[in-house]
Length: 586
Image 1 (cartoon, helix red, strand yellow):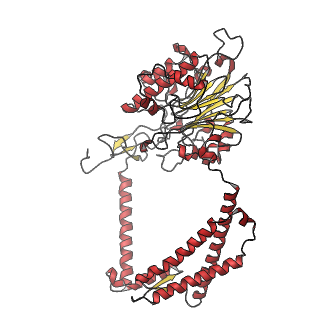
Image 2 (tube, one colour):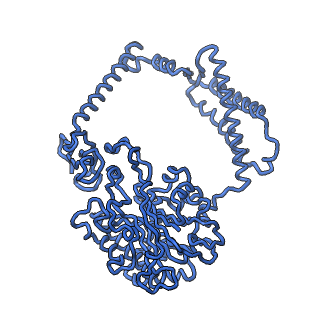
Image 3 (cartoon, rainbow, N blue to C red):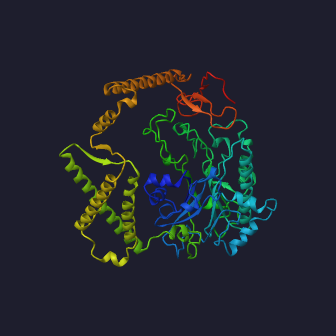
C-alpha cells in the first residue's frame, strides 16, 4: 500500500486545477492521502469538496473564530476503499478522531478509544482546559486507526522568530501531541506521523542554513524524536536517502525560488513501532526495515516546469498554478488485511453539512420546471422588446419614451412587483403531480407576456400623462454615438462652453493633457528604477509589510528568482531603499 502526504495550500484551488476532487485524488495514486492546509471551515463542507467515489474522507476544520485566521489551516485524510461498510482493507480505518487532545466535543470518540484520549492527557495538568482547546481548535490534526498502525495527519504551526505568541503556541502544540504519541507507543501501538511539520531538521534539509541553524529549539525537538538520538521515530525519507541533497518539499511563493530549487524539506513521514512479523524480537526487526519499500518526493507536482515556464522577473507576469509544496509518499509491503469493519462515524458520509443538503426528487423536479418557465418568460420578453424597437426604428434609429419626473413615477412600481410576486408564488407552489401534467404552450406564454407588457405600458403612460410636472424627453438610442451627441447637445452652457464645438474641443484638450501627464509619470517612474549590480537589469519595487519603523516603505531588489549565491543566474541580492523627498514617517 502507499501513503501520501501533501500540503495542498487550499483544497478548492487544487480541485479547480485538476477538474474535480476525484481527479485530484487519482493523480496521487495512493491508498491513504493526507492533505494539509485545506482552508475549509466546517460550514463550507460540501459534497463536491469532501466526497469522491471510491474514497472515505475525514476532516478537521479550523474552529478558531478569529477573523485574522478565518479559512486557515485544516487537514483531511482520504482513504481509497472498495466498500465503506464491510471491508477488510487496511486503508479503511476502524476508528477516527478529530484533534489530538480528546477534548473536542464530538460523539464519535467512544469506547476504548475514549479511554486512550483520557490517558493521553496525563501529565498535562499544567495546562487548563481552555488552553488545550485553543491549541486543538485550529484544525491541525486528524487521527485514523488502521488496526496495524495509528496514523497522525498533522499540520504543524508556523512561527516567525520574532512572534513570541506563536512560538509559545507551537511549543505547546508539539508538547501535547508528543504526549499522545508516547501514550500509544507505551500501549504497544505502531505510530505513523505524516504531514507538514514546518520544521527542517538539519542543514542538509534547508537551502540557506546558517551556522546557528541547528540550534533552533524546534529543530532540536524534532531530532530528539529520532532513533539515532535515542528517540523512537524513524525519519523515513532520510533513512532511505541519507546523503541526498537539495531534496526539498517547499519553496517560497514570492521569490520564484522553485526555478533554482531553493527551498526546504519540511514535509515528513515518521514511523515508530515493531514490524508485523510474528518473530520480531531482534532489534533490526522494526517496521521501517521490514515493511517500507521506498520513500520519495514527488517533484512532478512542482509548479515550476523546466522548459515550459518563463523566467521569473519579479513575479508580476507569472502565475504559477499549484501548491508551493510537493507530495511525499511512502510505499509499504507485506501489510496483511484486517477483520471486516465499516467506516467510523467521523467519515464525511455521516456529516450533516454534506448529507443534509442532498436534494429530494420533488425539489429537483420543481427546480427544473421553475428554471424552464423562467427561461421561456425571458425569451418572450426579449422577443417583444426587440419587436417593439424594430417598429420604432422604421421611423428613427432609436427607441424613445417620454418620462415625467414627479410623484407619479412611483406608481409604475407596484404593477411590476405584483406580477413578480405572482410568478414567484406560482413557481413555489409547484408539486410533483403538476410536473406530470401537460405544460402550457409557448404561444400561451407569449400571449400572457404580451398582455403584461401592454398593460404595464398603459399604466405607465397614464400615470405620466396625469402628472402636473412638465415632461422631460429622454432619447434612448441604439447607437452610442447618437446618445453622446444628444447628451452633448442638451446643455452646452452647463459645461461652460458657448457652442457645442467649443465643448467638444475642451473635452479633447483635457483628455490630451491627462494622457501626456500620465506618460510623463510613467517615464519618470521608469527612469527612477535602479539597475541591479549583478545583472545590470531593472529592479522590482517592493513595500515593507512587516510591522515596525519601516512599515509601508518602498525598496528595490533584483528581479531574478532567488537561488544559491554560487549560481550567477540567480538573484544577486541587490537592495536599495526608494528615494523620498520628505523624511520617512516613523
